[in-house]
Image (tube, each protein chain N blue to C red):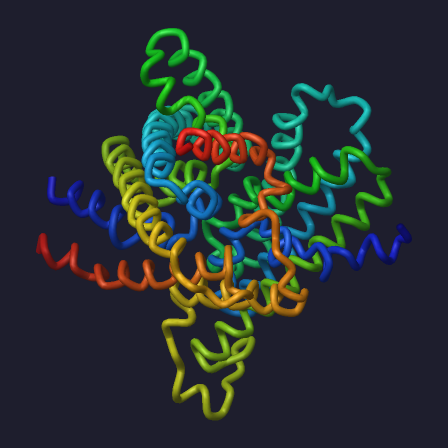
Length: 225
Length: 196
């Protein structure tokens, strides 16, 4: 895989939000407008880039059995740094993101990339992967933020749009609109990728607890028989 | 007392963790297929939310704040919660096997759940007292359960529906979640006015 492919896979083919379905919580919560979507995307990308680089550099030192706690501590450290930087230099953004800024620590994209990519690949590859995935996440967030802000408040990045500003559908910026737009976007991606029958209904691939969750669903199937 | 009731009911209905705050979407989409697992998961979440708050609130108030270490909140909370869940799991297994049997499988799943970390951080941010924080955690957990149980009903209806090909699976689930959350918006403002 070339460096360029490694970067661009995060944008479309393995888009973390729409294809891998990771990090749904921040996606739904912070895409109410373009500004907070951009802020969340940038913050997550920064954490993802740093954590991927450090985890990849330490991949031979971290014992396999305690790798998840180690990853979480590293990630939490970077999240705290980003949190302090945002608080100091962009207090407005801090207000807009609120609780979701510290919650980047439990964003499955970051732990998922550490598990799936960074602990198996070189530092440079991991850095490129982190940038690509971060860019894919930001792109999707901004796309959703655009749809929700344009229809919901009739503005884009704060600039009013002629007709829509007087006829806004405010439900789009609220919780139901988030679920609705997200559902539609995934349906469009399904349509574009040719309606291939998907094996998994919910993309848990990158979630560190995927194995358990899968086992749980399997056990139930057995119990039903 | 009225204050506590307002906190409890607004945590359940108005600021519902899943449907209006978007915390804990993973278990909401992943484990809500069957009623049994939805109930089991929610019980485990309520349980862990309560003990996590009971442990993290004193840590923040009596350890981090007096030492001016407030900025360590995120890193300390996530570690404490992870260790706590492991500890609870081991204790339950040894002393209360019956409870372990029904909740045990769900416990490791919620260590890295944003709903748990979210409730502990929000309790601090809102400036709740210890009792208020516990009530808020209980309400958040109950709200989580309400949404999970309701939604598992919606999903069992969806199984038999004729859905367009592109919408099969996750998209239709999200649209159904959108309509469920729409119904919760009807509670807005009700609670405050009830206890005026």
